[in-house]
Amino acid sequence: MAIPKIVLFYRFTPLADPEAIRLWQHTLAASNNLTGRILLSEHGINATVGGDIADVKRYVRGTRAYTAFKDADIKWSDGTGAAAFPRLSVKVRPEIVTFGAPQELKVDADGVVGGGVHLSPNKLHELVEQRGDDVVFFDGRNAYEAAIGRFRNAVVPEVATTRDFVDELDSGRYDHLKSKPVVTYCTGGVRCEVLSALMRNRGFEEVYQLDGGIVRYGETFGDEGLWDGSLYVFDNRMNIDFTANAVTIGRCSLCDVPTSRFRNHPDVNGRELTLVCESCVPDA
Image (cartoon, rainbow, N blue to C red; front, side, top):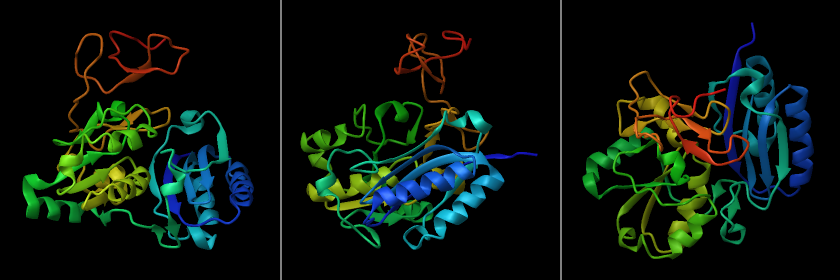
């Protein structure tokens, strides 16, 4: 019986020949019937792929056989079969997370140079217990992702794409946070690797990043911690809940009832994701 799984991982490490790694990764993923997206740059790899569990395991073993990727933190979740991703895409880009600032990012064999201090979910709770309301949660995702789930009382920048963060940080809107303990967080951790370094470059004094992102936090605490709502994901599931006790904090943009459901609306053929309930915009 086929068991669909999705894996999410990244690894910041210098790659002298990203194109060669691209060809290898494409062959490895395609030969195991996986679909999804793999991005490579001189800074490392960022991947989300899915398929049958046996195929995914073979892909993970093959990827970890490459010394630079052997310590990659692989996050597993239940998939939805062949429909999870439309196809396999493996590309080389200037950045594996598109902040539009590749010249600012420095990496070595240990990862990003000058980024925030990594905090496990448990260490995050220890920090909050010690520092209380001084701790600022800073959402490193697009604003629409935070509309259905976020850490309690988090700062959510009004950004539509990751590229918007540099201008947002340079605007001075968050200068009052520069002396506070700031915890950046995102889906799996990759965006905060870069965001925390950008913040430190701009004078934020005490910057942390949630190790493993929201995914790892949800695995640890479910809905019994500091997280409220659902997690937006970039495949056909659109969002996931950590437990059956997840609260619904999103609101339908048309009738204002609670929902975590995104759809392309008003143009079903377009790319504009809108938070809408099933009563307002039923599936065909």
